[in-house]
Image (cartoon, rainbow, N blue to C red):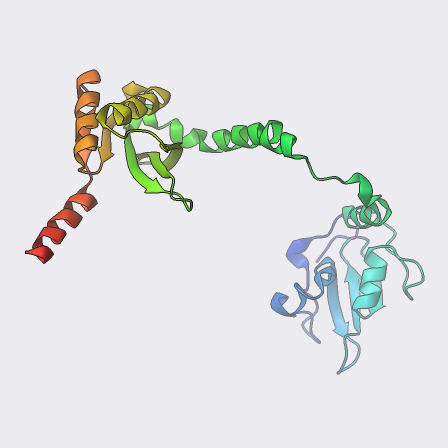
Length: 248
């Protein structure tokens, strides 16, 4: 039962009513087409056919009668709707009148420069905060750096870097290698940058495929960081093995 003193709708009791008559209507029937039914409690259906109900407002607690049109007029405080308007001002009515009375010409989308500078930096900061719980476990559990080569839809070569640990994987960055010679020294330099960003003391191993340049890059990293091991990708190894078997 919703308290009559509440200034906001009680969603837990929405759409419920007395055992006789029908207070329970499945949310799948009402929520999508008539969302305002969620802000009143249906008490009794007035007619066998049609949508007229006795309903109690979950905001002001008063009982009214009518179809969805009157529910809308009552909740949104629209005069002349054939029903007394809700006497308590709610966030529902405030939002409705704000949308109706605002000059939409003032609601301008952010420009190109703002999207690519300040707003992008704000979103990056927000993502960093969301990922902080995973990063906090790296020092205790260690982390593996995984890298692999891909091509984007325009066929530009990319090298993706990810960090994975017991807390879950995390995408770090993708490097555009267009026009670069992807030898072992170039790949090793990219690995070193990522390891330094993560913190070399947190890194346990790096995983790449079995290409000769990746293997050479792994050996360079092992010489620079004795506690970090290069591990060939198991999936790539199996692919090569099956390819040799099938071609035999």
